[in-house]
Length: 121
Ligand SMILES: [Zn+2]
Image: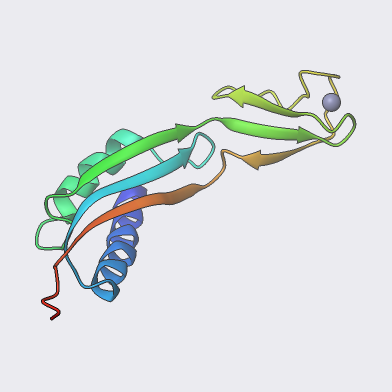
């Protein structure tokens, strides 16, 4: 499944980051998933629950934000939110000369770590 490999690499990035920071565990992971990214949030959550066992993110909370499609019109320059059913037309001037500026990718937006306090004197 597509989502399995996504979660697998996500956990690798998260663990790498946590280790660099000297964290003992990951508290919260926040993701932004573009509606055009082809990632199913439900499947991703299920895969996460399976894969997190034995990692620093074992008890982490995974929060998924759905990112609607944002386009920028090349004709009138207006940015528009097309929601999750994009028609690839500028709602302002009906031009099809547009570029998608958000909603296509998946990003890790926030990572909350629990860091072990160092005993400094
Ligand atoms: Zn326009």
